[in-house]
Amino acid sequence: MPTPRVVDLGLDRQLLDLDFRDTEGLVASYLLPEDAGWTLVETGPTTCREALLKGVGRAGVAPSEVRRVFVTHIHLDHAGGVGALVEAFPNAEFFAHEVGVPHLIDPSKLVASARRAWGAAMDQLWGSVLPVPPARMHALRGGERFPLRGGELRVIATPGHAKHHLAFFDTGIRGIFTGDGAGVRLERSDHLRPAVPPPDLDLEQLFASLEAMRATDPRLVLFSHFGPSPDGARDLARYRTVVERWRDVALAAAREQPSVDHIARALRSADAAALAASGDRESVISGYELAAMGFLRYFETRGLLPGSPP
Ligand SMILES: [Zn+2]
Image (cartoon, rainbow, N blue to C red; front, side, top):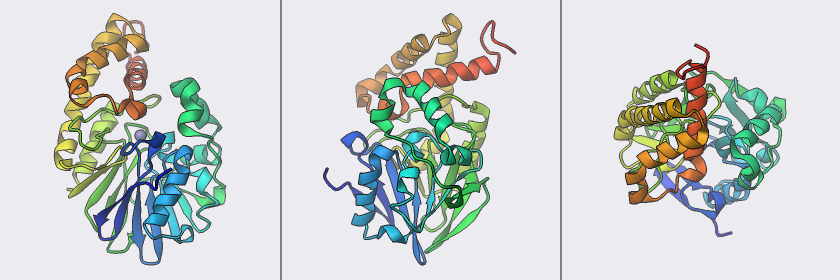
């Protein structure tokens, strides 16, 4: 495996490309300096563990210097690797939203939920999900602040994509780590793709969270998929419309036939122009089937389909 890419973001902040599935530019982790040590935002899945450790080394950081590890949420492409890093980072404390913490300590429900979404591909994509010892795991709710060199890291509750989703704002570079809260925008692509998976997608919360992220007035919008946007303020401003367009397509399709396949086909054909322009690199992390599952469950639980409970 070649050493993955490390990109300087200024003020000693680094983007680490985790080379998910041996592919550049799909899953990012971020390394931020503290006065005595380093903070990591996102670990990626267990299958990216070696790439992450190589990236940390390439950034000139010893594993023992990593002091805090934050995840935006517990979906496996962001946090699946947390348990597998407990020994590699012997001095690190791990942080996630309080709703997510129990599932990182005992990942059995998390794994079962991922298996429902990803099926047989699960093990190959994400690898095994190891438990984090409770003493190393800390709960966040939003509003917390952690010191960085040249700034601080502010925790922002951003439910919607998942109810336990967090964003992080680095005041030093005025950069916001959006996780999946502002969708997926890969490098060299103008395609902003909704990230709207099951099981607890909540569009009203998602739109409110987007406003909370915009309110930080960021200079850099740092996607987990992938990297600093060339046009971050515009991405935050347009994401609501992008999601609403998919929601409308999905709802019309679900009312014709409430099946994942039918909704996914409708989303894919509504996206034909974007697919023709930039291919479908996003699908491995935010595919049409996953979005169809997310919308279908959201519509059913909101009573938006004939015959579903009000
Ligand atoms: Zn993701």
